[in-house]
Image 1 (cartoon, helix red, strand yellow):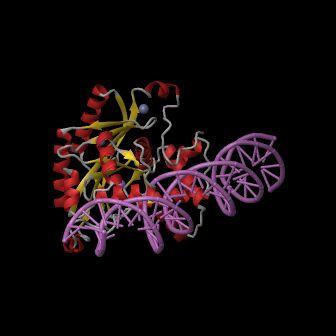
Image 2 (cartoon, helix red, strand yellow; image 1 turned 180 degrees about the vertical axis):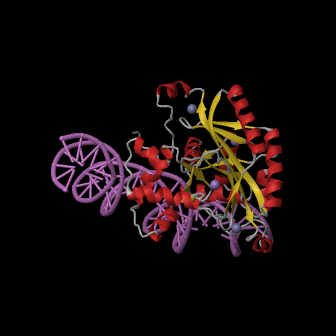
Image 3 (cartoon, chains in turn brown, green, cyan, blue; image 1 turned 45 degrees about the horizontal axis):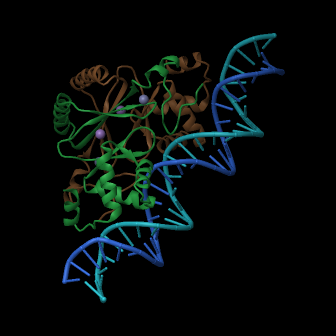
Length: 160
Length: 160
DNA sequence: ATTTTAATGCAACTAAGTTGCAATTGCAAG
DNA sequence: CTTGCAATTGCAACTTAGTTGCATTAAAAT
Ligand SMILES: [Mn+2]
Ligand SMILES: [Mn+2]
Ligand SMILES: [Zn+2]
Ligand SMILES: [Zn+2]
C-alpha cells in the first residue's frame, strides 16, 4: 500500500499526509491545491498551504502523484494507480475533466517515442496529452457566442 | 500575410506588434515572455511587459499564436504556421525544445477524438501533446544522479 | 492637419507557489 | 511509558507570472 511504501522510505505517517492521500484517492481526478484545501476543510482539518504544497511535492517525488498542467495557471495533481495511465479531456468553460483511455493511442505514442529516441537522440521519460473542448453541458451556451468560447485561463483574452 | 490579416480586422500595425510577430517567426519555437523581452531588447526595442502580454494575448485570440504549457509555471508562445501542426519534446534539465511530427500519431489522435465526441458527448477543439525527457547533451550528467533528474519546475522537488 | 480610437506605459495589484526558521510531532529505542 | 531526534508543520515574508485602471501616445482614416 501507499502508506507502507512511504513509511519504509523513512517518511512519517502524519495526519495531514494520510488525509491528503485519501482525498486524492477519493477524488480520482486531477485537483488543484485550492480544491484540495477545500476538501481538507470539509474533512474538518485545516492544513497550512505551505504544508499542502510540500506534501504534494513529496508525493510527486515518490511518483505517487502526477502533475498535470492545463492552461489556467494552476498545477493539478492526480494519484497514480497501477495500470491506470490515461489522459484527459477538459471543458474550457466549466473545467469538467473526463478521463481518456485508448490502447491504440498509447501504442502509437510508444512507437513514436522509440523513433524519437533513435532519431533525435532524446531520451523520453513521459508524455502529457490533454484534449481541450466543450462538454455537452456547456455546449448549448456556446452556440450563442462568437464561436470562440470563453476560455477559463489565467490570462483571459479580452472580449473585443 | 499575418499583418494584412490583422489590419483588415481593425488592428493597428504598431512597431511593437510588427517586431513581436517577427521575433516569433524567427524563433520558430515556443518562447516565454521573459525570453521574448530579451529578444526585443536585443533588437533595440524596449516594450513594457504589460504591452507584451497584451500583444501576445491578442495574437492568441486571433489564432496567430498558440499557447503551450510545460511544467515550469510559465506559458510559452509559438507562431502558428499553416500545415505546421506538431508537438514537442522538452528536456527536463536544459529546457531544450525539439519539434515532434508524426502523421501516424495525428491520425490515431483524430480517430480517438471522433470517438470521444461520439461516446462521451464532448466536443473537442484541440489537443496538447508534449514529451518530457532528457536531451542527448544533458544525458551524461543524468547518469551520475539518482536516476530522477533535476526537473526545471517552479515547485522543485527538494533534493532529499 | 484633424480626429478618433487602438495601443502603450506605469504603478499598483492578484494569485500561485517558495523559503527560512522556530515550534511541533511521529516514532523508534530504551 | 518516557526520552531524543529527525521529519514535519505553521507562520510570515518573499518571489514571480500575469492582470488592471487610468492617463497618455500614436496609428490611420478623413
Ligand atoms: Mn485522470
Ligand atoms: Mn514548435
Ligand atoms: Zn463544461
Ligand atoms: Zn537538455
